[in-house]
Length: 167
Image (cartoon, rainbow, N blue to C red):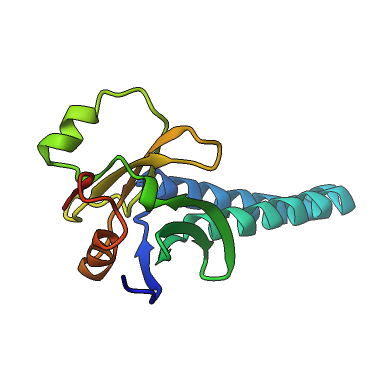
């Protein structure tokens, strides 16, 4: 077994509605700035509030996922604007029931199963997605959809039980 960590960054494609939202936020900032001339101090407070909200929302639009695989555990982090990081979860692949391409027969057979699903892909059609059925920290089954590269797929093979490894 390989004990070297394998990491991968996935840049998430922003949905189309974020373009409209960005334009609306900038327009709201301009209107709030112009309101300072009419309303005065209260308009300035409104402008500061709208500007801070715009800044926070713009940071949320630039999202990346980082997959880390080490010692049989898959860790997924969200990275906002290449600055702040939030741990999404840690899952043990040694307890996996299935690790397969989303287009495989085994994955399609379990597709209708009622389990919580977490999608950590870029949202593009050309990526090779993998579905992982494993248990979370509470012992409940969960479906993870990820887009690992070839190096990470090979690392999965050394930890996932042979009966569950279908890549």
